[in-house]
Length: 178
Image (cartoon, rainbow, N blue to C red; front, side, top):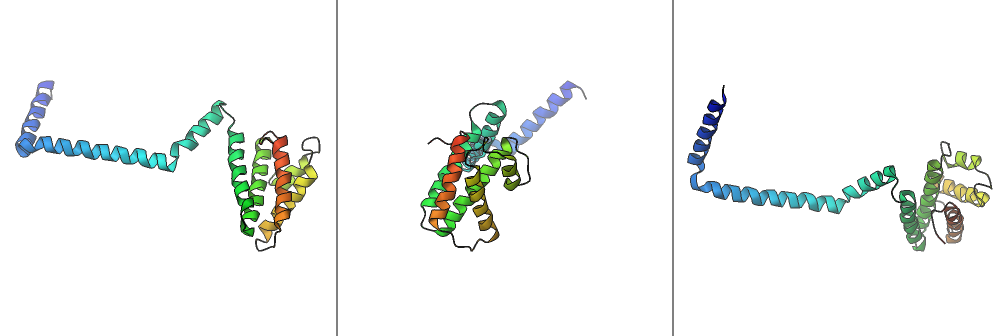
């Protein structure tokens, strides 16, 4: 099949379509443009509402070394912890302690401390690495107790003491500012 045959077939197809749709072809084009615009708007709207690209941008920034992603994530996590400890609900206090413990585990993991859990990582650490190591161990012990028995009674004062220990460690690790 040579180029002339292809062009002739294309022209015949155009004439056939024009005969079928005739004058309403303009309306079909207009409707399809409107639908395309509506779908594009919907896609953009959904992407912005779900924050899909925020995580992707943060990952690339971390890989390329721009910004301090670990610190920003820790700050966001700490803000959530502060909201939970301000709550009148004991369940929120427990969650605050658990979240602080989780952040500590992730920070030590990123710092290169090997271990299957935070207990193993804390065994590796010394007072030179973290000045309030004993306080962190007590706070982690409290977190472990909460994990093992979620129905345990927790005094707000105990939760605050544990969170102060974590906060001091995060400040030492330059993740939080005083």
